[in-house]
Image (cartoon, rainbow, N blue to C red; front, side):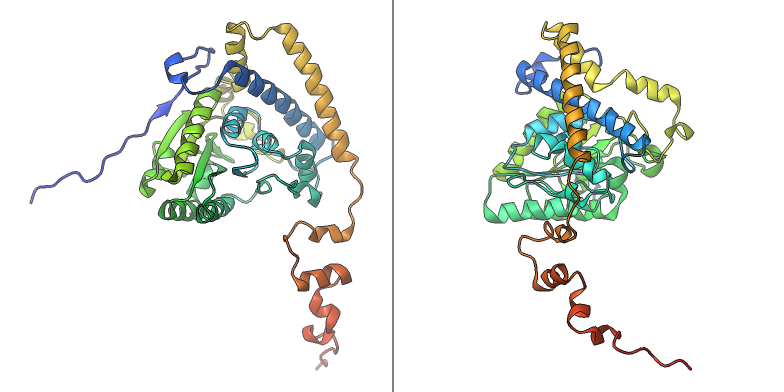
Length: 374
């Protein structure tokens, strides 16, 4: 019997706005309006100032370890705008602060998280989001479950979950992808491929030509986009969301980008990254690229930039003041955001400030008598 091909595939790459700010008008059809570009540019610029101040807070001892998002703002901004705030779920990793904010998370909560204040993880009422996740890849399973629940309920909504290229080498990634595919859950898996899994480059921690091709194993629509191009990111997520809410199941998007800072403030990337590589990617900065486009359309100038800078400084100053000026927490508040309805044993722990078993009957844990010494 002759051999025959039973499966073939291709991976598309989408770029609409190039490094020089030139727009492919044909590809841009159905993507962002100029008003939306202005909105996203301002959001990205304000966030860049937030990110820089967060770095300085850590360096001055006013905050714990912090992972900068610098250079990856277009992935967060474009994808967040394509999702519907208050309807769709956002399941972040730890470099999507801008997306979290655009969907309702106050910026000072994010600072509080990195300052070690548990209340920074409290999600405001009406905001459909999980807290930022530091463990690599575990939150993707939660996104798959949320998507399945929405499908069972018949909700016209989708969930988007973010992660880095390194997370796609984790078992949880494959478990989440397989589950979402089998259940045809409305989930968008968004990989921020910033080329580095801490100090390990992509080509050393996987043998795949692209990250996007990993979705082929799960028969999932997949695409690689220029992650520093807000037009491409927005359009890819918009199409994935439309497919998800219409019953088309999950999608995978690889946003090709670069982290311009260290992995975290506990890292020194100069020890493993070539300076020329960083400089080359700095020229592809999404903020610079977007500004070039706006200037070419006579929508931006130096005066507007100066005013935006002043506004950003004021906003970020108020954010820091709110985070550092928050009142001291009450011990019982630790329990407040754990469950919609607190289980009886945890309520007993909260009220007694002791584990329920010890508080009710010390003998249960062998505290009523000490063993005899031999």
